[in-house]
Image (cartoon, rainbow, N blue to C red; front, top):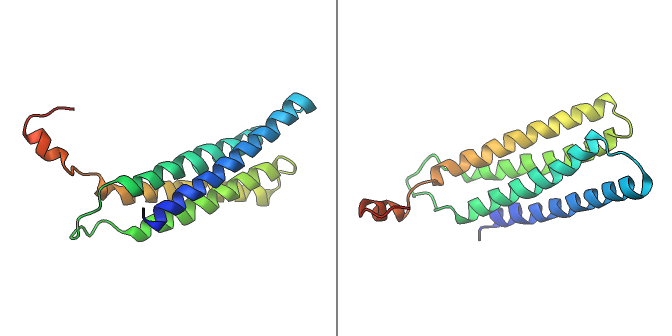
Amino acid sequence: MHSLARRFLKTALVFLVVGLALGVWLLLRRELGGAAISARELSAHTHALLVGFVMLMIAGVALWLFPRPSADDTRYKPKLAEAAWWCIAPGTALRITAEVLAGFDPGPALRISIVIGGLLQAVGLALVFWTLLPRIRAAGSAQREAKGERF
């Protein structure tokens, strides 16, 4: 497994722990403290699990398992996958932190941080899947389909 795929997967596991911790904190506050969960807290919890865990896990597994690009494929640029991680991971961390803090005091700096974090997430996800596009091709299935095999 390539080191970048491992980084995606290990980071996904960190966000799983963050998302679970946020979920337990919200559950305890709601059930034992009688506090309502705010939209910002729910957003932080959701982004930790769905973007931080699920999307990084999907991206890491895809980078690991998709067929290698052919040697003459100039479209595949591994540096884009690296840039994707640098957008998604810090962007998600920024968004989670700013969403939680904005629940206490939604000042303009935190609101701008939430937007920046969200934009980084979107750019990073677009980059990782743009990077994977050249790797979505028939490896052995083209020969099986030519023989009449159907899936």
